Image 1 (cartoon, rainbow, N blue to C red):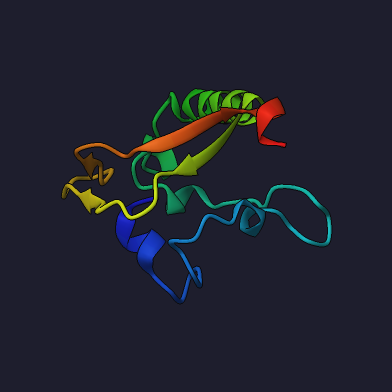
Image 2 (cartoon, rainbow, N blue to C red):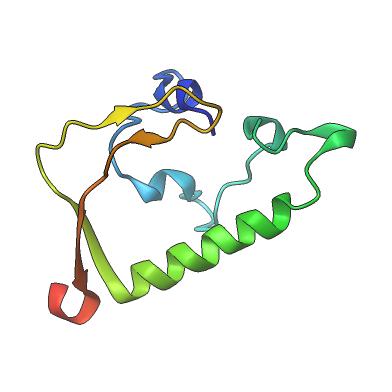
Length: 105
């Protein structure tokens, strides 16, 4: 999702807060379906990126693997700045504290 979409408060209240449960349907407990048109990075329609499904699957596998092994916490009081681009990369570093999952409990 592009940064303006993430920041749009009408689409997602408290968009900057880490709330993974916002992507889960409370009635079914399954991940909510998202329209392909919400990911302009991959385009949509007949000219959609051929590697989109592979890229999304890889992201899920890496995230699940990391989050199952580590507790991730951002270093407090960081001045996070973004670079203007299609994917809105972060300028400089994004510091986080990784604690092994067993030790975090």
